[in-house]
Amino acid sequence: MGNYRQLRLLSAGLCMVLLLASPLAGLSVFYKVRKGDSLWSIAKKHQTSITTIKRINKLRTNRVYPGQVLRLTPRITKYNAPNGPYYWQKPRASRQRHRNYSERPRSSPGLDYRRAQILLRAFDNEILAKAPRKRRKPLKGWRIVLDPGHGGIDPGAIVSNLTGQKQRVYVVEDEYVYDIALRVYKELRLLGAEVTLTVISPNHLIRDNLPAKTTFVHEKNEVYNDERYNRRNSEKVRPRSANLSQRVRVANRFVKGARAGRSLFVSLHADNTPGRPMGPLVIYHKRRGRVDRRSKSFARVMRTALHQPDMPAQERGRNLAVLRNNLAHAEILVEVHNVHHQHEAYQIRYHKDRQHHAKKVVSGILAYARKKR
Image (cartoon, rainbow, N blue to C red; front, side, top):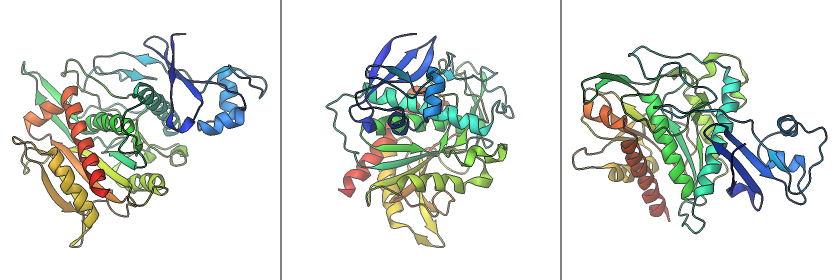
């Protein structure tokens, strides 16, 4: 069954959580029962149900005992791939074949949501397990929403690019910004923040694609991070331009309980704009000539963090759907790259560059949090 590794959850207090992690066996989250535990308390603490725990562990009664190890999630099959790894299932194609190529979901929105939740929990557990116990947590008490642009039915920009050997490859915006969002998520969790994603994927986490010509495939299986919304067995509930307001609803539920002034919303994109120069663009909320001062202040700090001499960061005010009616203390949209330019489309294909830009976004969030003290 693989090797067990003890994991520490921030929300789990003194409980012991175990993660089974083996390239062959896949991933599962496990829990070691402590004195005073019951199936009800375990299910509530880990956001699952008594029925699910009993089914996975083949329990006939509700009785548990100290020292017993329970699997909290189904085992997730892991598929290694040059542009992976993938979980549950992998794309049919090994790379994006052409500009119009896409792969339709093979499961319902509800099932994809449940799988994505399990995958994200395993990812979160693994992050916290590796976190140094004495590491400073300057973002403790902050709630931060990451909004990976596009996804689901909407891929965002799909642009062609060339490898060093002049091979044509295709960059799908939503697949790459989701990877950047997960890298930001990981860094923020290590810094003590509570973090959520508005859009989640059922089959991939951080992907280190080697070589970079094995581009990410446009899969339409992403879903909104909302269990009730995905109950409808319709592809229309998947992310698309017609339901952008759902991103704000997901975000607002998460930040509602945050301490005053300690919540942020960051939407991540990589636009394809011929008229815009190279470099990141940070957008703050501006509607009918009125500027949201907190949004602009956050944008200014983020622009400074993203600035590079060869690719200066820009700042602009716009009336965007994901910034309207947003309850976060401050909200911005970050165009991490302009993939219209070949150099930037080339950069975003490399995982080391995506990690570099993720750390810059995190440094902007940290700088704004320090400013708020």
